[in-house]
Length: 182
Image 1: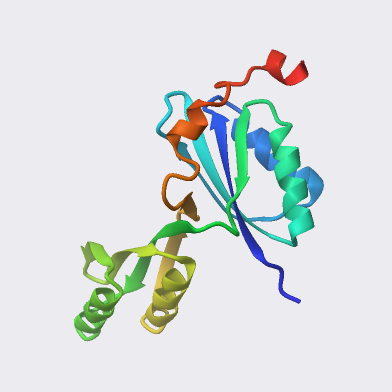
Image 2 (image 1 turned 120 degrees about the vertical axis):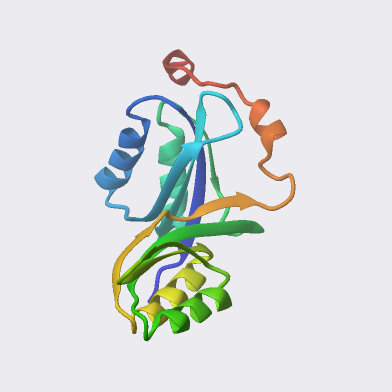
């Protein structure tokens, strides 16, 4: 039976070793992260993480509870069952020569992707979209010879104002070690 994919977001302090502590929690518990994206967010000194993990609701509940216990983790949300937008970016290097270059360009146009580098024997294609779109264009480009690919991992945000800045600012930011022990 295939496990369901869950998307979890976390607001964390932008400090050294936070990512290491979070990934160590997953490692110690034997949870696999299938996608991870981290970056600064709208609040100075904070970062937002997006994880995609596979498992049942019980496993995801366990993950979110354990994340909430970590110092520097301010807020954790499993947005899998909410209405959310997710995107991923991929750069794909594909073999291209004078005989197949125009066919590759047509394919890139169909997927609303961009060619970001042209070399005599290759093209680098930038594609943004959901996981299925990335997989689809990659599968079609394989017939030409994909020589390298890198993906950002999923970034996700709930639709509308849910989870917005107003809600985040209402929490005690940032949480310090003394707050966590009291």
